[in-house]
Length: 257
Image 1: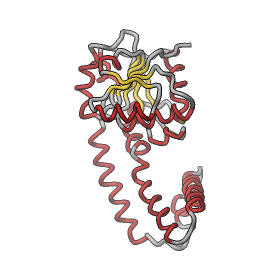
Image 2: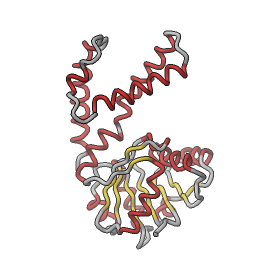
Image 3: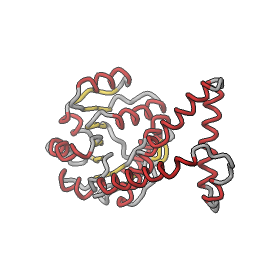
Image 4: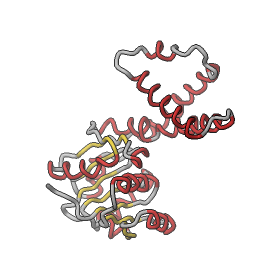
């Protein structure tokens, strides 16, 4: 089975950090991971938190067998221009960015061995949902090796590439729509005199159970949402839903290739 003797991250930001956390939680990092970033402080922080990774230049990271493009769309073109001149002939490129298609990345880098993933933050604890699309140039052995690398992060379902931007809105950014609300509940629970452990247990069960209740096959959403008679935030629902529709629809249009 193919394995990757070296992995290079071009970009050491949030996604790189939570993916490294996921690998670290599964066991010691292998020592073949190279991270490049234009911000020395970012690299200092990563080196302090993850023993086994190597600080690298973009050229060094781009010369690895697996090159992870962990940069935001606005700087993708510039990053790919630098990566191309150092990319190995047999390297596989994993892009974490929306908007840039596999075809566009292949044209910029001169290789067909392109993989695209939309990662999400719960990968840091092995609970991620990271949809992935493989270009035709990625062979069976490389796919098997990649799936092994992805496994500690959680689920990495293979999906049509055209769906990746929808997943960027739904699953990658999705936690940000909800986390602040759950944190507000934790803080209110303390005001109400409930201990932190008891509050967290209640919220965790409430969140997981409520999601499964709404999403279970055959359940009518309207009936599910009417199961609880007291709705303290009822008057605010229309404003919240309109914010979802306006802001997320606009963002989707912006990142869709």
